[in-house]
Length: 159
Image (cartoon, rainbow, N blue to C red):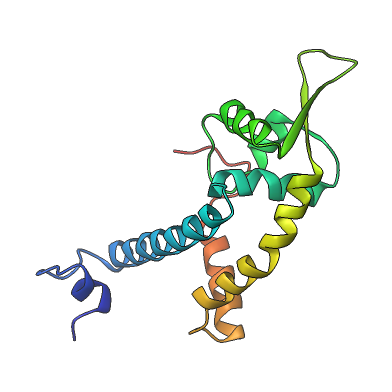
C-alpha cells in the first residue's frame, strides 16, 4: 500500500524510514496550516508573526519587555524590533521606556489591537477546528501528547 504522503509528493521510492515519513508529514501539515492562517490574518491586515505578538500581549494583560515577547513566540522571530516597529506604525502597540532602566523597552496593546484581536477570536477558533475536524477529541489529545513528547525540554540546548 502506498502511503498518502508518498502519493501526494509523487515520490517513487518508499521513505527511507518511518521517522522520515513522520517528519515530512509533520512539515507538510504545518505548512498547509500556516498557509491557511496567513490568509486569514492577511484579511485582517496583519501577519502571523504580528498576531503572535498581539496574542502574547493580550494573554499577559500587561506591557512586556520586547525581549520577553521574543522569548514567548511560537515561532522564532529574528527581527522582533522590526516586527514591533511595524505593529507600532499600524497603531496596534505602543512602546514605553522603563523608568528604572532606560535600555528596557516595554510594549503594550492599543485599543485598536484589542478590537482587532476580538474580531479575530471566532475566525481563529473556527480555523483551528477546521484544520483538525477529521480527528476525534481523543486523537487531538494524543496528537498534543506526541508533539510535546517530540520536542526537547525548553531548557535543553539544541544539538
